[in-house]
Length: 118
Image (cartoon, rainbow, N blue to C red; front, side, top):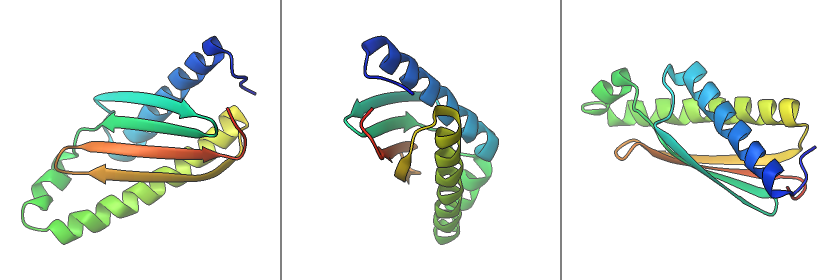
């Protein structure tokens, strides 16, 4: 659907940023503080500064193992929903989505691998 023109890639990045934030709000109840998106061939990288959910922040002080497990479960749900929405909205085949989150710095990195180059 999206070709490689600069304007279309710019619009695609904007749309992806909005979708990323929307899903974040649905799952965590808060949006991201900031995002930076980069595209390279068939990969999309999202660098995001998040805001830690207050309940998880409170639990992490004395129950690190629990919050690590909850973070992992929420990331799994997030990736599934993000993949589904990308394929539905943009009609692009997604091979996989990788995501990691650092609760101390509240930074996350998400990599989306597409079947074809963007």
